[in-house]
Length: 148
Image (cartoon, one colour):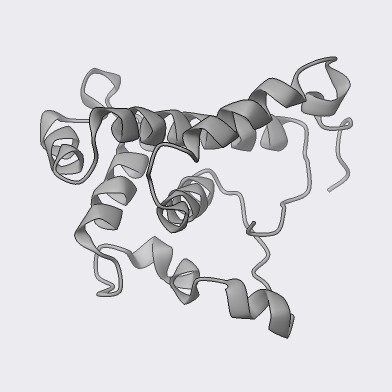
């Protein structure tokens, strides 16, 4: 599909840098980058965005082999409890099937067992930011990006 326009983050003056700054801030509060990567991939899967996984030897060597299993995180045994809590939160916030209870107290309390308030705040903002990027890219028909 041909993009409808250049990416809006490049078209709207001054838009890209604050988004990059927010990404940087989120990455500094102690949520493991691998967890953020897993969440990014799961949110994007839910939103119908596909990612190209690395196929070159150098890229594949740095890729987390669990990325290909993230859609089945509930049954795969390779995810730790904190990652599972983050993925469950990502699904609940992204799907928004019931906005009154999209992130239930049960889901929130489970995540709070593994993350501080600062980390939970960053995780929720990360989920929101990934959803933002997905929606902008889908609306303007941007090509899917590499996994990282």
